[in-house]
Amino acid sequence: MSELKGFQKTFIELALQSHALEFGKFKLKSGRDSPYFFNAAKMLNGCDLFKLANCYVDAIQDLSLEFDCLYGPAYKGIFLGSIVATAFSQRGKPYPLSFNRKEIKDHGEGGTIIGAAPAGNVLIIDDVLSAGTAARESIKILENLNAIPKVFLVGLDRQEKGSDELSAKTELEKDFGINVSSIINLDALIEYSNDNQNFRSYVVELEQYRSSGCYWIEDKPENADLGLRIGLNSLLIAHGFNADYKGLCPRVKNWKEIYNIITG
Image 1 (cartoon, rainbow, N blue to C red):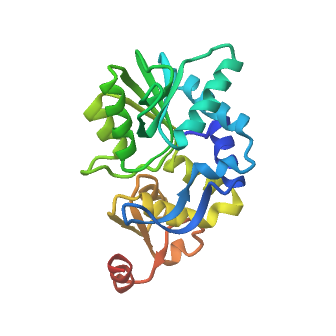
Image 2 (cartoon, one colour; image 1 turned 135 degrees about the vertical axis):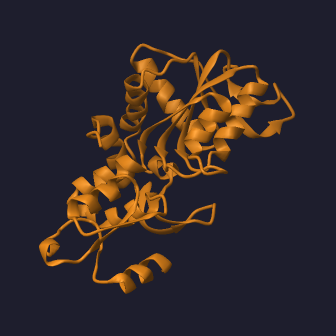
């Protein structure tokens, strides 16, 4: 796993300081239980928005993303798009910005789009990618306006599955030919937690949440750790030669314990 970049660490730390990122037990909209939750709206409660905006801009430049204008979907994309557009302007690179209303305005100029009319290649800015439903809505809005949804950039990619066995990210790229990118993903969050004593206790649950659902049973610590890194639920069978193991894989004494873990 590659070392986290400065803007990735800053993003995680801002999210933790503002309690936008929390560890615990949460029920997602999908019904799935999660050991962590991310709500970018909490970053409006005293978070350094200048630093947050520059995390997005640094990620965009690091990924060499090319686009003509910015689009922030309601609601969280509105404030994210606004601060990112401001950060670009401060760097001498102003971009047109638009966002949508949830309800059609029936007076004045009418319509659902506020700001510059989306045109050319559009970079969509949002907070999180889960199942990809919100991303699909934004893509369809832009396509109906004859704009090209070129990039979908989020702060956090949860690396969830889409409607099939593919990840939501892969499904969107396959279905729409759009570049789906993020400042951090679950892999990066696990790496950060593993490197920080205050959050290391959450790593096992995060690893299990990320896993494919398949179990990897080993007696050699190095092989058990490898299983974790590739997204498997690793179990280490206890032996005298691995008694000093201090890693993240649970040690099990016998097949009965293994059965109980797998069946819950």
